[in-house]
Amino acid sequence: MIVQGDIDKTAELSAYEKAAAEGIDPRCSPQHLPQGGAPIGDEITYPDYPALDHDTWNILFDRQVKLLKGRAGDAFLQGVEILEMTAGSIPHLADLSAKLTEATSWQVARVPGLLHEKDFFELLSERIFPSTDYIRGREELDYTPAPDLFHDIFGHMPMLTEPAFADFYQLFGRAALNGRGVDRIKLERLHWFTVEFGLISQEEGMRVFGAGILSSKNEVTHALSDAVTVHPFDPELVVEQDYDVWHLQDVLFALESFEQLVDGFKSWTRSRGLL
Ligand SMILES: [Fe+2]
Image 1 (spheres, helix red, strand yellow):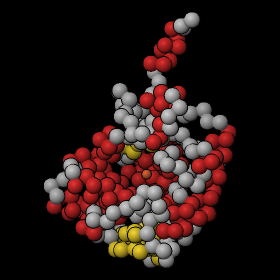
Image 2 (image 1 turned 90 degrees about the vertical axis):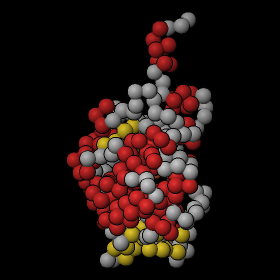
Image 3 (image 1 turned 180 degrees about the horizontal axis):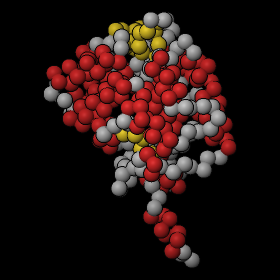
Image 4 (image 1 turned 180 degrees about the vertical axis):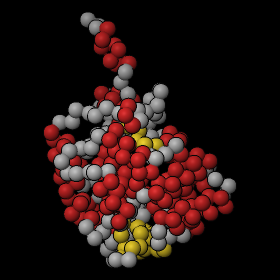
């Protein structure tokens, strides 16, 4: 028997929910935003997470905070405080969005998984950070092939409270929308070696601000070890540097300040006619 309510329910499924129902790991295939866009800020509802998910957050949060002592940059650590993240329970995206808006006029959108580039760049260009709201399974504590909420929330959001970085990320979105061909590849490298794997030189020593390092147990100890060659940040060099997503990084770049990132990015993108 077909019940009207069931039909309506199926029609309302997101691409993520449909893929999950079909047994595909939806996190691994880029998706377009649902029609009508993604829920933003207060429109985002808080999922009914099982206790196991909160425990996973707790384990990951506790472990990373301990590992990040003396390794994470000041901006990131301040961001964790501004966003009032704790080990206790998975934060609500709507609350994080409100705090980001207060700090740097960014908002959060709840997205179903990896986004197609154009959707991703469009959101960034509007100062909207796309975040997932599901957490990795227990068998993926050390590594997950695609973003989950721990990477998106813990790895990325604290840096969005840093005013210069926040401006840079919006500029990145705008430039990326204009990038074609080789420029798109160069922009991906700039993203990789800053947003995901960036280092910053502080008075006390080298520190991490890239989300790919901050949210990973293995990357965080590796990034500041002797196994890595660190070059001073220079957009002209970064855009020529290849990277391998499947292995620990052996070349990284270090900023002097986030203002240097904004200035360097502006001058490089203007030289390419992207901004
Ligand atoms: Fe990321």
